[in-house]
Amino acid sequence: AKVIFPIGNYQKSEVRELAAHFQLPNRDRPDSQGLCFLGKVRFDDFLASYLGNRPGDVVDALDGETIGRHNGLWYHTVGQRKGIGKVLNPLATAKGPWYVVAKDQKRDIVYVSNRYEEEDFARARSEFEVEDVKWISDEPPAALCQSLADGPEKRWKEVRVDMKIRHGPRIVQGTLLLKEDGSTGNITLEKKDGGLAPGQYVVFYELGTDECLGAGVISEKHWAQFLQNYEELLAGKVKESGVVA
Image 1 (tube, helix red, strand yellow):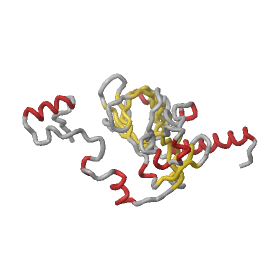
Image 2 (cartoon, rainbow, N blue to C red):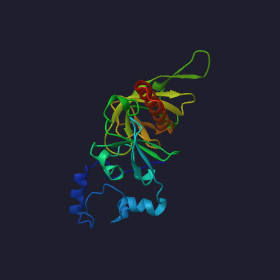
Image 3 (tube, one colour):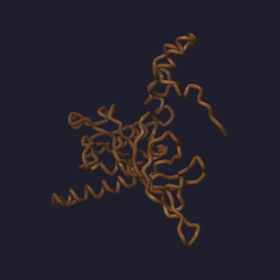
Image 4 (cartoon, rainbow, N blue to C red):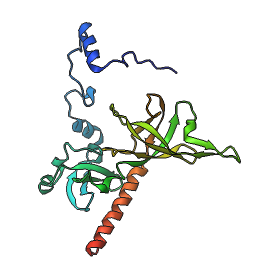
């Protein structure tokens, strides 16, 4: 199959100039930062009409204290800052800004922190696993593997690649190391990301070029690992303070 993007090489400003030149009816329509088909319907109202509410605790990820109540995990995204204050206790709100750092779907907990830039979150924001890895050429690039002398099996090599995570224009750098049959892999970013979450796509590009190599999906193991590290962190702080849990 082939895909053609007729305006793919234009900047948004150029597209607007063309729209004005050809007197298109939507030439003056403002940019949409959300779901454009909702019109004037609030996003939370749209979600509520389909998913309803399922309240749970909002927990400080660094000390385990419950500091608020949310109406449903689906109203919050990892990295979110705007809108968190309305579900926090007044005293906690004053200590912001707060960011969503993870969600525990089994216990309906939203984890937040007002120290998102600190070292405690470095791993959660820069290391993760991808699954369902697919390649444009149907085969992993040669740079990612080397054949073993005693058979057809391959040994995976860690390689630097360019990546696009989620939507948006930003390209980031990091390393990719495939595992087992090559359908999963570990990624380490060179700079921390503010919103890694399971289910998001990561698209791989050859380093320094615009050649798309393939893509994978951030695994559910990302949150599982964060929650495990979180429990270990809290246990260590409890032990240091001498408090019996």
